[in-house]
Structures are given as C-alpha cells and as structure tokens.
Amino acid sequence: MASVDLERFLPHMSKLDLPSRPRRNRKSASIRGLVRETIVTPADLILPLFIHESKVDDAIDSMPGCHRWSLEGMVKEVGEASALGIRAVVFFPKIEDDLKTSHGDECVNPDGLVQRAIRAVKSTYPEVTVITDIALDPYNSDGHDGIVQKDESTGDLKIINDETVAALCDQARSHAEAGADIVAPSDMMDGRVGAIRDALDDADFEDVSIMSYTAKYASAYYGPFRGALDSAPKDGDKKTYQMDPANWREALREAEADVSEGADVLMVKPAGPYLDIIRAIREEVDLPIAAYQVSGEYLMIKSAAKDGWIDEDKIMVESLTGIKRAGADMILTYFAKKFAQQS
Ligand code: PBG
Image (cartoon, rainbow, N blue to C red; front, top):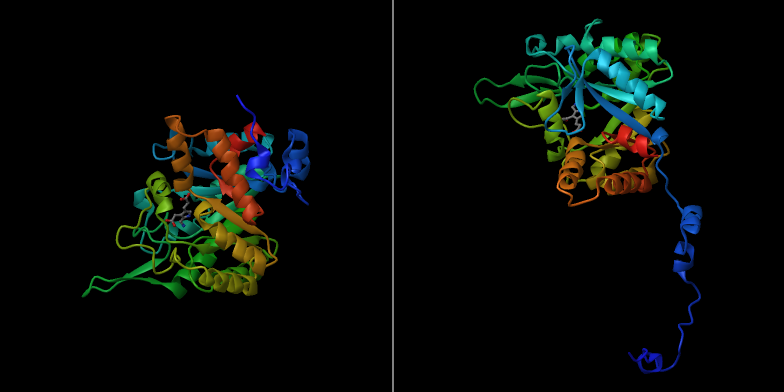
C-alpha cells in the first residue's frame, strides 16, 4: 500500500510546527499519573446507611447492593467500611408506620432508632464520623420533610416553615445528645441552619457541625431512595421547598444564606446532573462542599452495568472523579464501600 503523501495534503510542510503538543503529557501511565489533577480516595467518601427496626438485614430491591440494616448489621458494616478507609457514615432510618405522626414526634425520642444507631457506632468505632439527616420525612405521616397544614376546603397542602424549623432544632439537639458529630439538615426550610446552630450552641453542642443541604433539588433521581424507605410524600410533591432543577442563581442565594447562618459544609444534591452548581458554589464560597450522588444516579449505573452495557467499575470511578473535579471535597455515595475495596 502506498504511504500517505503528506506533501499532497499539507503542501507547505511535512510536519506540523506546533509550539505545544498536549499529548506528550499523556504518553505513558507514569506521566499520566504525574499530571493527574483529581484523585478520589476513600477518605473523600461518606457512606449512606439505611437502618430499620429489625434483627434482619434486608437487601433493598430498588437499590441493588444496598441493605436495610439491623443495628447489629449496620455496626458490622461500619467496621468493614472503616477498615477500608471510609471514615464517615450517614444514617437514613425506616420508621415503623405506627410511630409516624403529623408532627414527626418520634424524631426526638432519645431511644429512637437513629439515636440508638449513633450510640452504637460511637461506642464501637469512636473514630468514625457520624452524620445524621435532619428532616421529618421518615417520621411524619404525610411523608413530607416538614409539618403539613391542609386547607380543608381546597385540599391544598402547605408545608409550614417556622414550626418545622422548631421541630428540626429539637431533632438536631437530640442527635447531638446521642453523640452525632455532624447534623445534616436536608429539609430545605428557610432559616433552619441559623436556628439549628443557635439551638446546638445553647445546649453546649458548639462542637457539633452542620452540613447543610444547601442546594437540594426537587429531583426524580430520589425515586429509588423513597422506595427503600417507603418515604414518598403521601400527597403533593416537594416543589415548594426543594429547588427547581432549572435554577442556578438561586443556589448561590441559598449558599449565601447558609454561610451567613453558620454552616460548616455546603451540599449539592443530586451530584452528577448538577456539576455546574457544584462549580458555581465552589467559585463563590470558601467552605468545603459535599455532593450527594443520589439513589437514581447509583441505580442508573447499576442497571446499565447489569446487562453488561457499561463497565460498572470504570463508570463508578469516572462519575466520582467528575463530581470531585467539579469542586466537591467530599461525596456521599452508595458506591463508597465498593470504591474503597478497589482502591
Ligand atoms: C429526605 C432525603 C431524601 C434523600 C436524602 N434525604 C429524599 C427526598 O428528599 O425525598 C435522597 C437520597 C437519595 O435519593 O439517594 N430528607
């Protein structure tokens, strides 16, 4: 076969005269390692754990690879994760239906499921950071993050902000009393970060941190999670408190509020479809940023990999790397343990 006639295609030169050839920095695995800008490590990851009132560990159908743990099973899982280098966990409880009320009163029970889970981990693995979710949805009979007021004549629902914030303060204080290191309000009520900060400080918990779900979007990517906890709203949706997926300036407004109210870490959720939001907040704010790779993001990867359509391990690493590259310092992900097993 005749060789390519360079002179014919590029009559004035036989070689490109390039001042820069970026490919030189990609020419070997060793050099690629030297120039790599973003490396995800197990220490960046936070493992979400579902817990329930049972002695049995149940596999969750809607989230392959995840379980609803008994307290004993959960503590064992924390031990395994910690041995792999995962140093932080966050709990999501499935509360028995007969404990749910319109005001979510069970959330402050000192012997409630979450409070016992906190004590169980802190007494066994004190070095592991325990983060708890602050919101009423697992506890309230309406399945909303806040207290619902129903207009009997129109049937319209209203999630009442200020009364909810008071309940969230009690919940945060109760988690701090049980030994939580970080409370993470995921409810999106206005003013809750400042109110929780005051409530914690007044109770001498000034060392307990607040990881605020700053920009939490009203997202369909939470579907599998709500299936796992049976926590979907009974009526209506969460659009009057969670953010519109179309907005980014509003995320900056939320970030500004959380900074001024004393948040320690700001969170963006979901993560993968909202990388621009992570970047926008990164550029405006000096606080650490967390991003939550949520159940739908996880499930899409899991289900595409199940039939061999994509390579699960590679997509796991690439998706987490993208989230960190966008500006996240830490990532909540259901892949945490699997990622750590391979690192
Ligand atoms: C509720 C809460 C949700 C998630 C974390 N905390 C769901 C919701 O807002 O309905 C979602 C997590 C996931 O999808 O992985 N306070």
